[in-house]
Each structure stands twice: as structure tokens, then as C-alpha cells.
Length: 549
Image (cartoon, rainbow, N blue to C red; front, side, top):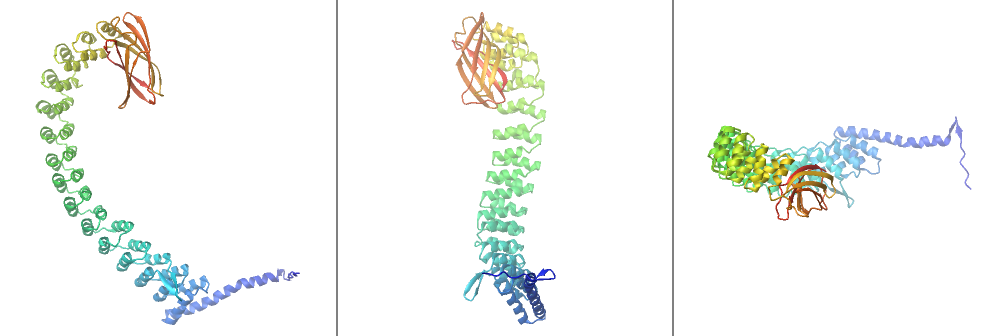
């Protein structure tokens, strides 16, 4: 049986409580004694007594001492050798870090940073990475840092040392050293290089193209950049250099002489001087480079000369697009032999008199069509005369597209020798009555009205009703219906037989049907175009409507 310890009270406080207070106060007494001893040793160490310094180091390293005592010892230690001993051998990271914090000697810091382990009584111990990194963080000696970068046993140590380096000469030496293989380190290295001579040397002579590229990207020296852009063995690095050049004369020379198209184009991208651009536009080996130069030119005479003389169509087109001067455009429209260039010039003319002249008598049909289609030409009499008398159906069709005279359009629709001209006229007739009249004399049907009954985006469904007129007996029981549904460059096409045909009068019919396309969905605005064909394969001009899904 265990007898409980009696609780003895004295002045209201249990004796057990007094014992506890005494026990808790004992460490404080020990710390006070140790502090007195440490202060004494510190004073002696500062006075030059080596033995006292060693004793402080011994206290700091002794694992039997409490951490507070060990930290107190190292906190008053100033001897660099003793601090290094503690930093390496203390076997307590906090104590070791405190020792490093008090180190100032660069050689000693280097020793701590490069010591990975130590031996005590035939047992090996590692110096914590954090301790070694803390030593590196205090290093400023560039030679020591370079040695650590090259010879350090761990990547974290080498990278930390590199981060502290600033000496451009030593950084360049490391950049050329093929033993430094870490990609992360080399990227950090090139980020730190700023000396242009060194960067140029690395860009031209470093061990790998990736390293040369990294150096080239930091170059700003025009002479070095020009040399690299012209002579480097790698065209990607040449291009990088060309993109960084600013001297217009150098850029123009490079754009004219480079045998690499990308390099020449990169040079043009930085060129703004009009005289040099004109030189490149006329001399570069590559049409894409000449085009790039043309797209920056504003001199109308230079642009006109390029339009007339360049051997490449794309360059001529680019130059023509840059011309705003009407006199220059007129000269090109009348004197350049190439049809495509003349058409492009005519389309941009604003001189109605010159347009009328070209529309009436130019020997090139495509150029005449361009003049007739130019909105600046508003000569209704010319359009009517052309429709009535011109022998070429393509010219008559172009003139019909500009006609507003409904009576003349009806006459053309009924009697022109060309079905294409007739169809163009029919599409411009506005009156349903006139359309019905035209239908009586044509071999094929004419859609006189189109109604959209309903739509559904699912399967692009469109329910429609057509009013169709034709000569009696020509439509047949199930005329063919062709439909195109288009929107922004995409289209759906369908040809079917009319599903419902109802006669409403002599030669008059209502055609009802549905357009749909499986696995398709329509959204937004589309153009619905429809035409009808008889049994004898006479087809109507198409009629179109905008519809929204």
C-alpha cells in the first residue's frame, strides 16, 4: 500500500510547491554560472589569450552543454579560426550558423563553404548544407567564389557561389569552361554577364550554340552584332543579332547581302530610313525582303518605280497598295503592260473621266471590267450604251451590274444573247410583275418570290416557299431545287426534288420544301441561296436571302 505524501502548508503555500520552484530555478543558476565563465573567457580571448579562445570553442562544440550555453559561447567568440572550427565541427546547426554569422575572414568562409564533412573519433559527420550556404552568402572574394563554382561538390553550393559573383572577367572564364555543365547555372551565368566584349567572345566562341545564343541575346554593341549577323555559323544566332541592330546603314547592307532570308527580313524589321528602305526594296535577293521594305515605304515615285520594274508579282502588289497619289495610279493604269497590276490600279482610281475612257475603249477586257465596276464611275449613259452595244458579254454583264434603269434591265433580261447577262439583269429587276413578264419568254423558270417560313439551328433546317414563273408546261412535276447555305467562308449544299408543287395559274407555281443537313448546326447570320431547274435542265437565276439562326 502506497501512503500518500502529506501536503504540508506554510503560509498558505504547499511545501511541494516550494520544492518545485527550487528545482525550476536550478538551471537558471547554472546558466548564470556559465555566463560568468563565458564572459571571463571572452575577455581573455579578446586580450589575445589563445587558450581562452580555444576553450570558448570547446564549450560551443560540446554537445553535453545546453544549446543556450553553446550559443552564448559562440556569440562572444571573435577568433576566426576558432569560429571556423565551431562552424564545421559543432554538430548543432543553430550553433554552427551562429558561428558563420560572426565570421568575416573570406578565406575562412571559403573553407566552411567547401567543407562537406569532418571526422571525430573515426566517425564521419556532414556539415549541414544550410551552414555551408550561409558561408557562401557572406563571401565576396571573387576568386574564392569562382573556385567554388568550378570545384564545389554539390550543385546548390556551386549555384549559390555563382549567384554571388560579379566580376565580368571571371564570369567569362567560367562561361568558356566546359566543365560547368549545369543548364541552370549556365543560364544564371549568362544573365549576369554585361561586358560587351566578353559577351561577343562568348557568342562567337562558347562551347555550345545554346550558350552562344544566350550571349547574343544580351549583346548591344553594334560592331559585334553586325559581325555576328554576317559571319556566325548559325543562322538563328545571325537572326538574333540582326534583330538587335539599330544602325540603318548596317541594317540595309545586311538586308541586301545576307544569303539567309530570315536574317535579311530581321534586318528590314528594324529599318525605318526611307532611303535605305528604297535601296533594299530594289536590291535584296529575296522577294519577301523586298516586300517587307516596300510595306514601309511612303515615297510615291519609288513605289511607282517598283510597280513597274520588280520581277515578282507580290512585290508589285505590295507597292501598288502603298500608292495613294491619283496621278501615279493613273500612270500605272495606262502604261503598265501587266493586266493584274493595271486592274488593281484601276480599282483604286477616283478620276471618273479617266475611268470612262478606260471602260469604253481599253483593249484589255479585264481592265475595262475593273473600270466599269469602280464606284467612282457613275455614268449611267455609258452603262446603258455598253449594255446595248458592246460585243463582249463579260463587259455587258459588268455594265448590267451597274444599271438602275428597270425598263432596260427587263429588255436585257428578255433579249440579250448571253444567259449570264440575262441572269445578271434578272437579279436587278425589282418588280415581281416584271419578273413574271420575263418568265414568259425564257426557256427556264424564274423565282419571283422567296419566303422563309421557319428555321432551326439543329441540322441547319430551313422551311421555304418559292413563287416560280415559267412558260406553261416547262417546269415538270418535280423540278430540281438547288440550295446553298453559306456563312463566313463555310457552306452547305443540297440538291433535291421539290417535295410539294402547287400550280397557282398559267405558268405560275408555288414550291414548298425543306433544307436540312445532318450532323450540322447553324448559328448567327447565313445566306440562303436557291435556284430551280426544269426537266429540260433550264435553270433559274438564284435568289438569295439573309437568315438568322
